[in-house]
Amino acid sequence: MTFPDDSIQASIDPSPWWIKQETKQLERGCLVAAFVPHVDQVPYTVIPKGRKQADEHGTAEVEIKPLEIKKPRRYSSLPVAAMPIFDNEILTAYRAKKRPCLVLGTQSQPVEDAYRRGMPKRSTAPVVLAAPYYGADKDGKRAGYHAELVDRIRHAQYAQFFMDSLPIGGPAESILRLDHLQPVGTHYNSYELSGYKLSDDALEIIDEWLNWMLYGYLPDQEHGFIRGFQAYTDEFFS
Image 1 (cartoon, one colour):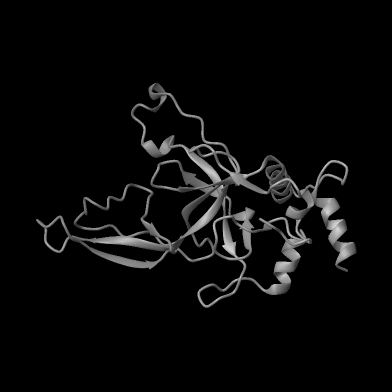
Image 2 (cartoon, one colour; image 1 turned 135 degrees about the horizontal axis):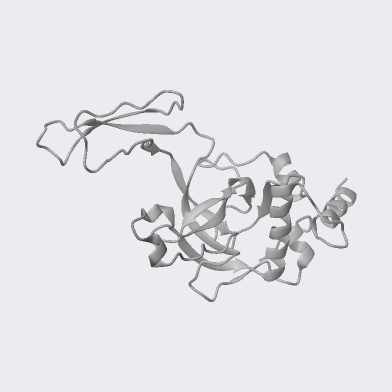
């Protein structure tokens, strides 16, 4: 793959940015696909209203409404076996989209059976932390990003955004949202491997960028990549 001269990927050339992933394991830097929610939306709550008939368990009536955190949920007079609601819990619904995601955390350490006995699976279910990509290009189906904002993102002006091009087709440029870092389950139905991962040099840059986003800190030019790249783009594209 080739990258624009004003991209940080070009700064490590001839080292590759993306390489083939030789394993079938979730590992740091690998590119996967997963359904992730639109995080800025108002979530909905799904309220089971009960069965249409007391002896009918295959169907039920539900109410879907915007979730209001300060209003208590209403209980069903006829519980629905397929949609149980436990104390202090609600059912929520989010719009989600299958997106490319970059795995940035190692897999959770497995918990021994002796320490999981009698606990719900969710209490110790393994996950990885991943950040989703969003298409930067505008087309009939995608809102995309403002062109000047895209340029600023490419030139490392925001800690939460990272510009990239993915080796799987799709938009010419994609924006990695590090501030959307979220857990993705390690069950085989939760993700799909793309067959690609970041090279070691590329992952080192992403780690520095993630540290910038999390802690607001960038090392100087002698000990990092980003400050030198910012100085280069400020001078060359001013």
